[in-house]
Length: 116
Length: 109
Image (cartoon, rainbow over all chains, first blue to last red; front, side):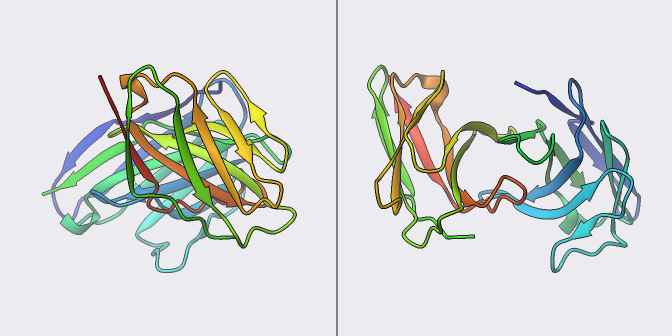
């Protein structure tokens, strides 16, 4: 199956700093990538959808100025958590989709963010 | 997208088949049934999907009832590594997946 990587796998930062998380599709080109957030003992929640070369579409309640998404190439999307606060501590997961007609999204291993 | 209902948890014995039910009584004609699983602290993993015919791959089988209002995911020979949360998702395509609470499956030796 297709492989999606995320970097870093874990990050600890101080409150007020910004953190960038990378999501890469390693062996395929992803026309669309998705970013999810998962709090402990909860299910995944979709944050935003990004298509290569265009602005991301954010789900209701997700602040686009706080969670900056860039999808500059068909194999890389980045999520930047700006001015992180302890309540942003969570498990962030990306997924990548080849294109309409392919059957599935492929998920990355996730990035655990802890904001102190 | 139609909503799904899954039991919150189930146990199964190692080496036996695990049958995971999912109700999706409001499914529409163009919606697929997708199954993903999430092993603790990892990203979800695609298992299988189908529209109306039963499907089988190297991981599992998917049985969809004739009226499409429910389905069953079958793990033919459960192993300890199959312990995970299993999500049944109904969607027109895989563009936007809405994850519910899923079923926590514990495989016991």
